[in-house]
Length: 231
Image 1 (spheres, rainbow, N blue to C red):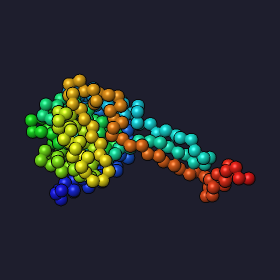
Image 2: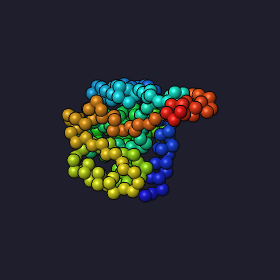
Image 3: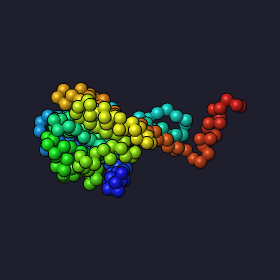
């Protein structure tokens, strides 16, 4: 693992905290601005992923709990993802991957072949001009892909292309130390049965809970004791 890869991953994870905390509405606004520069099908894909994110994971749910507390269930990004695709992957497929990763609060490394329909550096420029903070999306060369996928801090990989390549990538991720990483594969870049699913964005989030005590100090302890059935 090179020092350069470690530095890039550290920087991406540092940026992730603020991007993840920005909220779905703000991230959607940025991605919608970016979509205005894209071709019709790609624009529709951005809108589709953003709409699904708002419907499925954009809402904070209030959960029942002891008197004096509020308990909230919400989703958050998983961290830094790698987005990569074969040279023959469609623009719509790549745009769908990028949008799903970003709208759910993750940062990403974009790694595309030189003869891809899209340029990683051009995508970075477009998104930053649309309001995406510097460092949220980073273009990397294909010779850095293997090291990035093997890095234990990478939360997952979104790949569009051949089944054989996805199987090799799955083996590489399985061989890593540390936590398991998510591999999200699309092997039909024309019909897009995976990327085109309304629940595709669920693959890029994790659930969190937030408990807030709104009582005076000691209030909860008293209330819980009264309800314990010991008196």
